[in-house]
Length: 111
Length: 111
DNA sequence: TTACGTTATACTTTTAAAAATATAACGTAA
DNA sequence: TTACGTTATATTTTTAAAAGTATAACGTAA
Image (cartoon, rainbow over all chains, first blue to last red):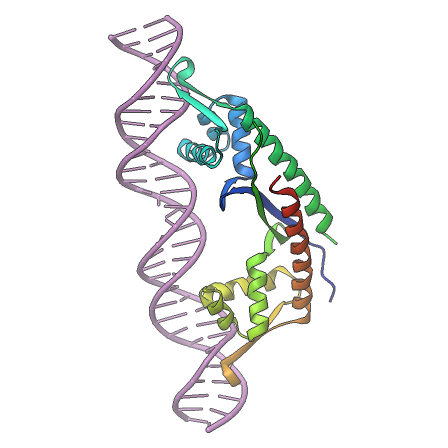
């Protein structure tokens, strides 16, 4: 009759105006853009299409009132994408929440 | 530069052997089965197909070592589905975790 | 002024999920 | 022994998501 051991898993994300704006996958994308300076490289690393990555970046930027990523085309290297200081702040905030969430999951799982 | 107010949302679920076995939607299904005594009625209430509901019940039952739902065909009313005491216990455990999770979300959202 | 590699965008194709459809199996009660 | 309403299962169709393809726009540097 006793409940056997189980693993509790889950996801958290940030919504603005009832729309999902930022979650685990998108934050990873932002981090990779920050590290590489390129949407394309970040997409390749995460094995998603450039289109999908660009759409996500676009959606993230539209969700907030100021951009998290600024991108330019042309120039040295063909173009560039940088994560703004505001973007870095949001990333940091989300990761802090996510860490607490992981703690929550391990506290409430198993049994 | 400050992060604007935002809503934190999310989901939690129970995994057994790296497989999702029970989450928010499935628990609601179980509750409706318990209330109606019928997989079909529960499915109708949740606007899903009987097939989908049955597949879910089947998957839930396979995940645990004892069934959460026992169903019979034929007889008075055409057939019946009941949630076992073990099933009720699991539902209750999940809902308790979920309540804590809701608390977590509202504590960490907004700002 | 040309080549380069990326951003930006549209369009098509593929794939996977969901829904819909059909039908057999079953046990009670009339 | 027939009708009923459900469980149980297979199959097909539809829908939506993802992936793939193509191409224009751009700014630097050779």
